[in-house]
Image (cartoon, rainbow, N blue to C red; front, top):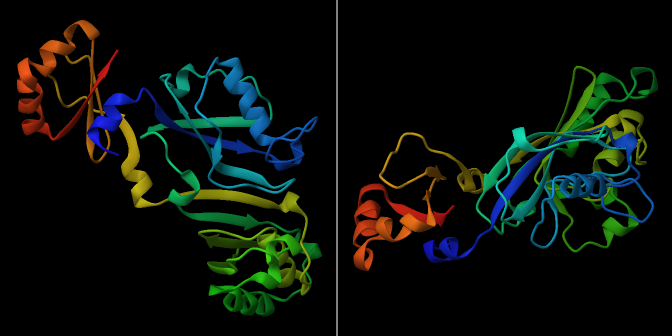
Amino acid sequence: MEIRDLEKTGYFGYLFFIRYDGTKFDSFDENKDKTSVKGEFKKLLDENNISYYKGIQQAGRTDKDVSAEENILYINTKQELKLENFRNSSVILEIFDIKKTLPYLELPKLIEKRHYIYRYPKDRIKSSIEEIDKKCRELSGKHDVSAFTTKKGRELKEKIRELAVYYENQELHFTGSSFMPQQVRIMSGYILTGKKQPLEGRYLTLEKIIFSQELEDMIIFEDNAISEINIEKIERNREFLFFYVKKSKKGEVIGNKGKNIKKLRGKYGKIIIKEI
């Protein structure tokens, strides 16, 4: 984004890091009269009187019964949000972190990888350790995975996926940038039982969301190392500094014909002036 765009908009983005037991939900996306992850999140936004621009994006969409140790929901809002001020009355959806970002991100495209773990009961595993390791090596790499998805998945145009699969401590690990519908559960069935059938979602967990460097660079944090007259607060990301000023002092900070702000930008770089 350009400096002028960031100066004009009142919006910032926020990443909500969430954790949940998938068996407590009927679906991830909202469905009428059903308990959904997004629906529960929207209730919390309403309870906190948070309005947001357009919709809610997700880092990963989990199937019914699939849990998440870490997933992320993203909104754009004009309100300042901090975890310590966020009221969470939900007993089925935990929000354990909130990070501020540049606005208007396309979150799924900025996620580098997603890490899943399938924890199947040992007494239900039909394959030997040797067979499991062999199939993990077979499925790792970049190839057409359409044999491991649903009919709907096979209708998707892009069928090539790159992933790493390994078995460790009786847990099956999958890491990849994207997955087809039910891909992990069907691959788990193939590896652990020898059948290309989806195993139960309740044993699957979205363990970790791995950011791209581009997304990391868009995260905004407070900068307490800089102090300037009439600047109430300073935040920054890799590219921009955000100087927050009172409306009554904005003219002084900018200066006649922009003289003062030019001097500050010469000293610090790309500064965005925001009113508080």
